[in-house]
Image 1 (cartoon, protein in one colour):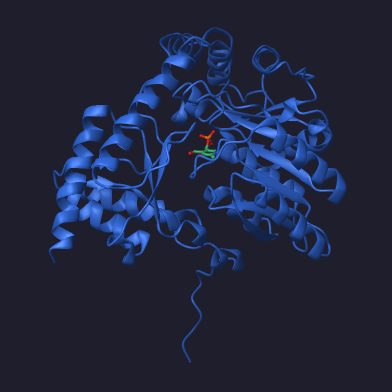
Image 2 (cartoon, protein in one colour):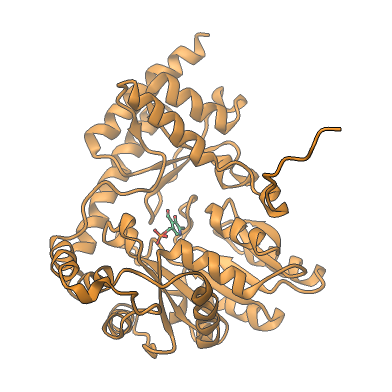
Amino acid sequence: MKEESIIRLSNRMDQLPPYLFGMINKMKMEKRRKGDDVIDLGMGNPMDPAPDAVIDKLISTAKDPKSHRYPESSGIKNLKLEISKYYNRHYNINLDSEKETYFTIGSKEGISHLCLALMGPSDSVLVPAPAFPVHIYAAVIAGANVVRIPISPDETFLNRIVTVCESFYPRPKVLMINYPHNPTGVVADRELFKEIIKLAKRFRFMVVNDFAYSKITFDGYEAPSFLETPGAKDIGVEFGSFSKSYNMAGWRIGYCVGNSEIIQALGKIKGYFDYGIFSAIQVAGIIALRDCDDTIPKLASLYQSRRDTLCDGLERLGWDIQRPKAGMFIWAKIPEPFNKMSSMDFAIEMMNRANVAVAPGTGFSEEGEGYLRLALVENEERLRQAVRQMKKALNEIENL
Ligand SMILES: Cc1ncc(COP(=O)(O)O)c(C=O)c1O
């Protein structure tokens, strides 16, 4: 009889499919190692630098030996005060800086650990789909039952929540939302948040809003904070990120604001896992929140120009594209005759034939099949080049 291997993983590992972006990334790295110039529209990983003032502050603070100790895990006092001022200035919301704010090692970490604090086996969580993978899999890792609801910009989305809540026992405990939405670009207005809060109170679920793309908005659209809507703080929290608004993706700093009991639970669980964010990054974070309001519209306008360049190019190829009002992505339906391929196969073809990395829609759950997500992280010249290379590759595929 064959002896069982010593290396045995937990059962929960069986519930995690291979991370599709990991596969695309690996292909990209292999091609780059061979000398191919891959245009990377795969991940929403900004290539532009953080504001100078923020970098300068990081450098000077990193030289202070006091910065090298374990940090204040929930966030240093002045950073917590600064996010409260930011919310007041941008959204007219008052936050108790001590009880209603918590800094996380990026919003992804915060969301993941919050899932462990809020849910476990026998709990259900509602997740609009397609979805940023952590919205589904942090709940799966926590042992919860994930109920995916197709996202739509209209009231069918709310009706679907009602149907699920009425038909589930025990009723869903958490609704995980993400407006502006990755990958689809769907945005919320205050009316939608009002309705969601009504449903949350009626069916007694908590709401977590991932607000990572809060400031990357276009054509005059401004994304409301979930917490602006009366009653939001009674039932939910909002996560924010420095990764997109300030190009600080690698720094790993984000935050959770809102309901104090939920925030307390997040702090409790994180206390067992980590010690928070490097102090020098926290101090630099104060500069971002306090002094960099004027860099945000410039960044948004950069993404808007890239959006237009890429959409113009894809439209010239005959693709039917919805221009998003926010976010860093184009969510593009794969047109005929190429839609006979799966989105993963299509992404692989684009990598191999066009040297363009894109994210397959199924990386965001089955609901994403038939779509690609293209990140606006390369400059306009490279985006135009990507379209030219895709055009050539599509011609090759058509003539096979
Ligand atoms: C919707 C969404 N939330 C969170 C994140 C991760 O943000 P952070 O870098 O703050 O962990 C991303 C990154 O792409 C995202 O798209």
